[in-house]
Image 1 (cartoon, rainbow, N blue to C red):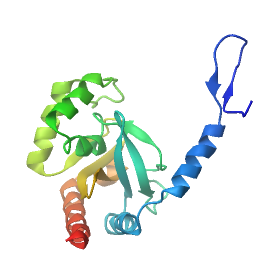
Image 2: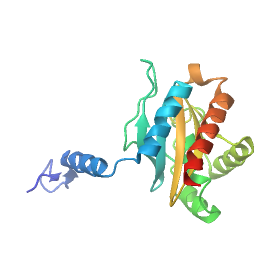
Image 3: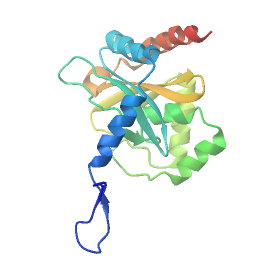
Image 4: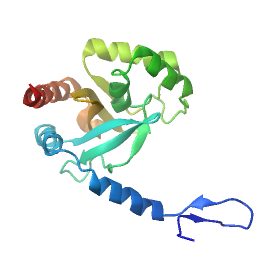
Length: 198
C-alpha cells in the first residue's frame, strides 16, 4: 500500500520498487563523510589525476562510501553506494587484509567466483596468494579483474573503529606503468592523514 513492493503478476511474488532508492538517498544524506576523509579524497584526485574512492565492507562486498571523480572526460565513474566484490578488486583485498584470517577465510568460502574478465581471480587460493604478494609490495593492484580496461590501486586506510580502504582508479591506458608512483602518493597522503589522529 505504501509503494515499496509491487506484484507484476498475481501470485507470482513481490518485488522492491524504486521507492527504496529514496530511502537510501535519505540515509546517505544523514550520514555524510567526515570532512577530513572528503578532503583526503580531493587531495588524492588532485595529486594523481584519477578518481578516488573510499570503501568499507558491506556483507561480502566492498561498498563505496565516498567518491570524488577525476576531471578528464574519460575517467572511472562511480557513485556512493556502489558495491564491488571483495575478492575481485584491489579495494576488496585492501579491506580483507585488515580482517582476522578466520573472518577472511569465511568470506572467501562464500564468494561467488564469476569470471568478470579474463584476469579475474577464480579461487580462494588465488585471492590469498594475491593478498600475500600485495602485502610484500605494500599495495593492492586491480588489473581489470572486475571491469575491463580499468586499473586500480588499493590501500588499507587505518581509521578509528572502522575497516576502510582507499582506491585510485582510472583507464588502464593511464594507470599502466604508474602503479608504484600512485601507491607512493597514496601512502604519503595516508601518513599525513593519520598524523591528525596522533
